[in-house]
Image (tube, rainbow, N blue to C red; front, side, top):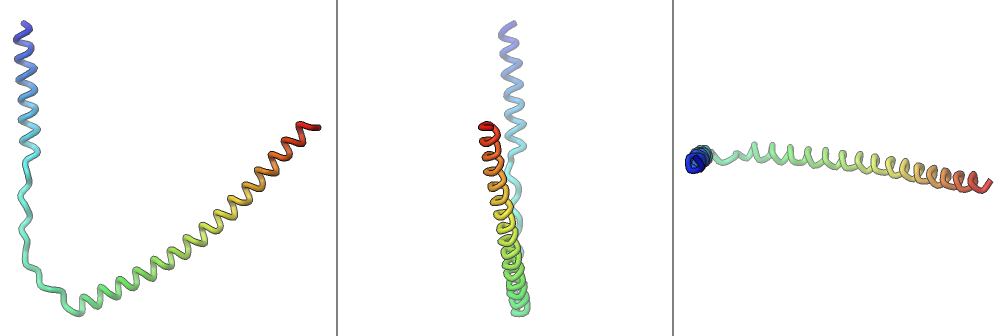
Length: 95
């Protein structure tokens, strides 16, 4: 009985291992087609897009800096409020 159980478990493990290996077969590599070299017009277009993207990123950076300044100011106000609340707790315990 125990030998039959070991045989069934071994056969199942072998079947699952074979199934797993079959699924991991390497896919066929894509074929490379010869592409014509980019024309001068497309290079100029890409450069213009790049310049536009750079200026947009600079604007976003400036906006982020403003947001960070506002958040820092809010954090400073919250710190001041927390210090004042702690002082009130200390004074209320004394009285």
